[in-house]
Length: 225
Image (cartoon, rainbow, N blue to C red; front, side, top):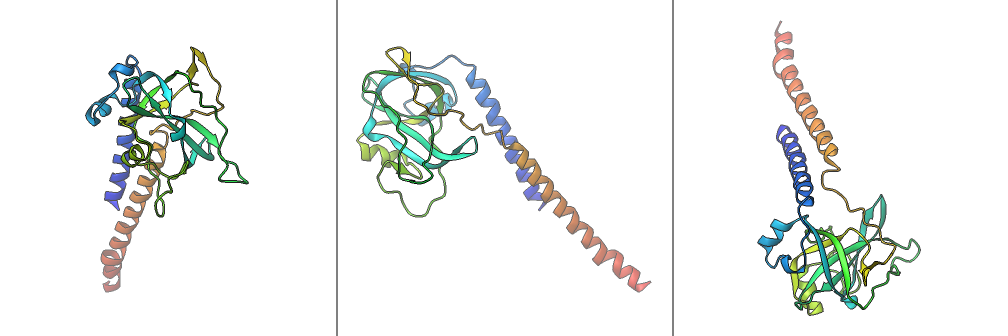
């Protein structure tokens, strides 16, 4: 139990370090199409840096990740590949939309224009994977998204990263209001819970130590006395 408490403290330390890295990389100059990572190693080095991309949406490849929360509400993360001038594409996490409570299969109506768009955001890891039973059907609503399988299904060459949009896309230089929320969760926000779990484990550890001393040492001596 003491080891579990130390593990929780280590998890909090990791999240604080990640948040510090996000803050540091967020102050670096914005990347562009030409400097976008092509390898996983480059993607790791560019994580959380600002980026501005231009390209064309691949609307037929839009995916809605289900059971994703923002501001405490359930809904979808809307993902659409952005085809670059080089012919390959990068997955853009365009934002969050609420789910229809009466019809779970009803998709949010978000415009996806045909012209060249400019996306302002930050480099981010591939969307996190949630626990699920079985595999998703190849439809627009999914629980998780595997990069290699998705690229093969859509016939795309995807860069080894994704981009979290931080502002509405711009079409012809004019921002387009799409109604999506972009209050992306920060990894260090829930650090307090790790400190709370660690305190619980240490309390359990102290209780067991106290009970051992009482039943194995003090009580037998009192009985003999």
